[in-house]
Length: 525
Image (tube, rainbow, N blue to C red; front, top):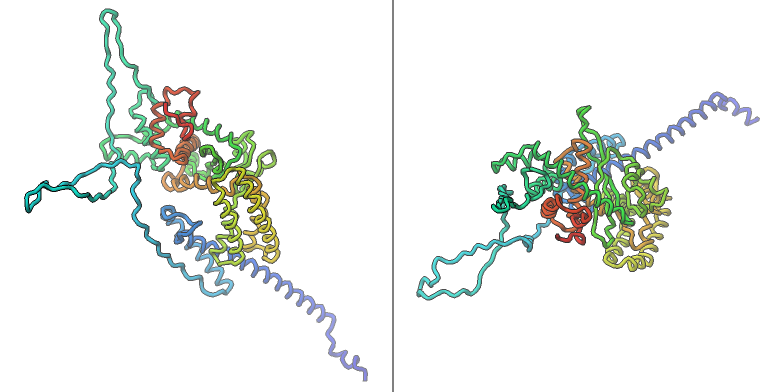
């Protein structure tokens, strides 16, 4: 019997074969779609997990790369809300993926208490001597002899105290000549104004360094029985802003003479009266090289947007090396004669956040390698430019080349879309600019100096909330440039501004550099 003929009745029809083939193809396509969905869901869960643990560390952590305690307190409400929202999103994703219960909450670590810090030696001392009621012995009546003393120091304060300065100009006459002699009135930065330079400096430092709104200064004055209306205070602020503008312009000119600059930007809200709302503007920051021998300078520039044209307008024809983040607005500069330097701290932070979130061994290895060349920088920071260049060439460059090869090799085994892939891609994408610092002894390794200069302003936004106008933003940028530069030069802002406002009305423009808050240029008149 023919086996083929016997099996013929059991052979599937062409229609069944076609249906089976289509069904299998559909199932394979559905499986592929499911695998893609699972991959992206896993990536999203990983991203949310990373964000959640990052927010928890920002709120409870006290280690490096986290905000300091006062800053965490300032952002407490926002962090709490962000944590709740992130936990809710993550819980939804985990339930959708059937991955079990949400992550347990992180316990707040205990903080070690520091001992009492010594009181600053530069503070004036007021002595209070506590002598016995009698200088004779209470038992035998003999005179007491001092054999020593116990001294304790306590910190005290005299709150802001208002007082009136009376300027008296006697007039003398010569009867035979029929002439009158009197000393000319002292020039004032505000003609006919009520305030002394010290009071004007107090208002400006309180508003722009301590970020206190004018209505709070109005209340402080009222507690002392002094009526200073907000309109009066605002008038002083506007006039002093105009008086200080030449100093800001000169500071900007000196900054543009530097061959290496740091740049960054931070958003601020600006009132938009036409719509009854606020709109976003930007405070651009530029700082001189932290590795340079010249006194540090920081200049803020207020602009209505974040476009690269504002950087081009500010820097003009400046040529040099510019340390920036990955913002695309800077890229137009690097097509000309401006050299790009990328921030190594930004690249490190990607791996740091990943390691804090899930203890990734790959991230740990990256952090170890980052630590190697940061350790080198710590030992050569105070060296000469030539010595720093030599050490970087001998030690840092080989380590950087090895790290680059390690990143390329590791990336081949890492799936796209995950946090680790993004961290590696960030470094690879900017590698030339990241490693460029090691080719020169004058280039900085990261952009931390400019971020430190911006941080007080970012914190101050909690108080002043928004700029009232573009002019107000430009005025704030100019004054904050001067006050922040004074701080970086270890110059007390209140004393500097008081002294400057006293001299400014009669000061020759040819000697304007002597008024700038730069230590080497501060020659007392």
